[in-house]
Image 1 (tube, rainbow, N blue to C red):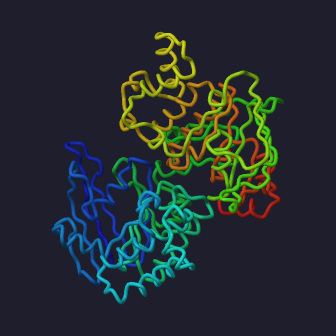
Image 2 (spheres, one colour; image 1 turned 60 degrees about the horizontal axis):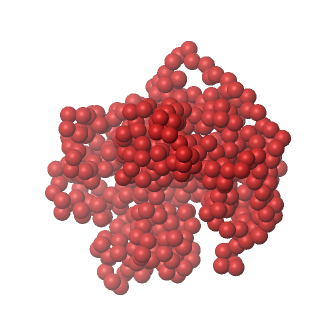
Image 3 (tube, rainbow, N blue to C red; image 1 turned 90 degrees about the vertical axis):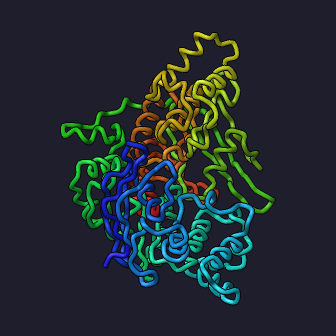
Length: 530
């Protein structure tokens, strides 16, 4: 019997159809994954279930919900009061980024208690329910979690608090919208395992939204593949992964980077649609003998207690691509911030040698994980790039400036007309291209990519990784690729540094390390990445 049944759903913005005649159902106790790239209509489909779409959009069709508490109803015809009751007690959302979704000025206990009260629990039952929810999501240290503010918990713990809040009203259906996108492979498996366990033990259903077929492989019962507002195929997850029928699904699977594809351009969606396509080899990287960075016995301690980095030593050569791998909290971002003077070291030494007299910011640039947060939404592209050029080349002439900006945009696959646009006018992949163009405008020697592709879907990730590799070779860049994706590091990097709890547990040539890992932690990361 179906808990949720969507029939002929259409979502329009004026005359433009964003979701086109979508139909699917979720059985009671079933986990259904909705997979597709950014802009395919996944989130809009989910938001329409509880009529959470913005006023500028209009939804048509039927959405039937049939539970023991509420009976069968068409959610599209319910008034706001009835929908609110369903939202509190029947259908709950788990969002992608808990640090954004949780209130930073309230303790986790206050936020959980508020959800429990809204779900109709009496005062004398609140503490018992709070304890039950924390146990359900495997947060053992109840008092510490209750008193903690979101920033005082790890990424995995925050996501568990979000799940507990969603479970407060004992819903029949959970809608999880990209809940593991920014998590490392070990934490992702932990959270997905927890969600699956909760669903199976408590006979709950789930609609799991993702752009990553790997994330749903061991998790969901069935998978629906969505593209440009249409569901292209729906089947058991094992069949979708092992025997995809639609050309787009095959193309999506082909986009994933791996060590086997090293030395060749990654396949994009457009490439995969060509039956005669064969991957082209990359130009060989030239790694020089000069050391760009030498790090000796680097340490970082916070509050004289927490050791974020412990005796870190490594070198990076000119033109080399180095992968810095590790789970959340391993010290990757702390290390990158120290390298660009955003954090101060507690001990040790860092030596740069760029063979020029330019300052650190002219030689080192960063590309961050979230391109929308990294770009000023109120500035046009022209204004952003002009600022960068004038800071680093104060005597640049007007004609040179225009030529330089257009050249930077063309290098990252954008056009001169994009100079007059704002960040909101671009897709996620295009915004990341803008961030890369802005970084390259400085003509740096070292580019630090801090999780630069982790929030992108596989098809866009392939485009950005191809672009970065092209630019690394053509601009003779040295690249430090900080990532929690073993697949990305395997394809992109020629050397690997593995961090765990602030210490380097293994480092060396990428091919050798992936073929014969020595450390148990490295072996575990590889095993979970397959």
